[in-house]
Image 1 (cartoon, helix red, strand yellow):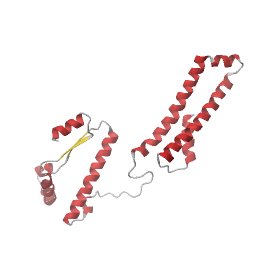
Image 2 (cartoon, one colour):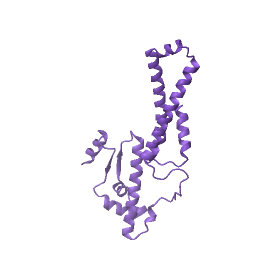
Image 3 (cartoon, one colour):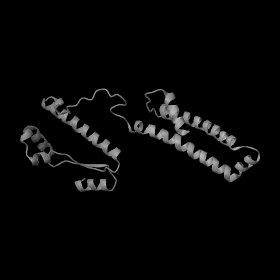
Image 4 (cartoon, one colour):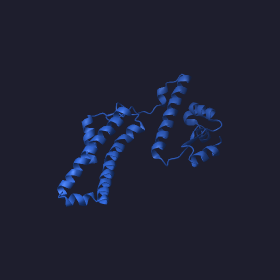
Length: 202
């Protein structure tokens, strides 16, 4: 497709990015390498890859940017290797050692999992509690319980015990699904994960 068609695809939401290479890109890139600091602006402009991004979703946009940068660095290293030069000359002069927490290439699932777990633990129990209270009030169960001699403390205690049991079962199934079925890694003791999500749900 032409540049305008590619840009329009991004505008229409059919693509997240569009790449444009000038008609003499390969020649200009080689001239830029040969001339180095003596290359003129036209050569530099022709050797640039023009990237048109849809940054409405910043997560996807930054992932694409990172992927493009890494892909070009790999290409440049392979290119220099074919020419007999040291490919390390095009790498950034920064060495990233072993990370303290996490890893250098996390997936979106790993990034989103903690927040999703907390949201499920909080909103599921909140919705269940609200629904049960509304239904009891609507069906007249609350009034019948009070008439039968149940005081407010006993009423609250029954709800707390019921919701705690439901929350415990829900947490167990949710953590099994997250860590064993979907394989999301956990770097710490599972008891802490369960405790944090349990108290968040409470």
